Length: 89
Image (cartoon, rainbow, N blue to C red; front, side, top):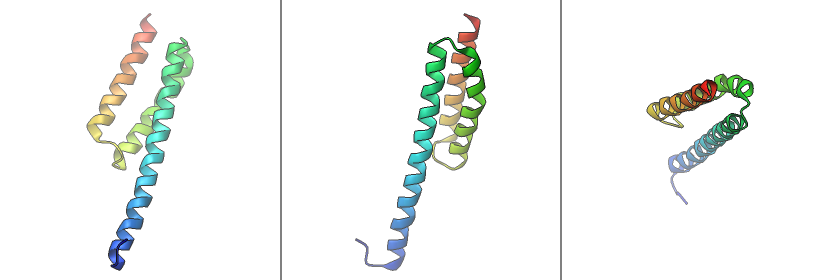
């Protein structure tokens, strides 16, 4: 445990940020899993409706620094490719 007051505050702030990052990542992973499940079940309408929400969540996570901006762009591109491929079949 830290003895200095500023170190105690840093510890509290870090714990709060870690919790928020975990929440954002968890929500993002859940949304992506639902999207991929919709694609596997050939439910293109549901997947098309989910896509903008997932992109918004990815962008928010990137803006807050939870995930790197290049990782966010890579995730969005991968999801778009899967949606387009499913639409062409």
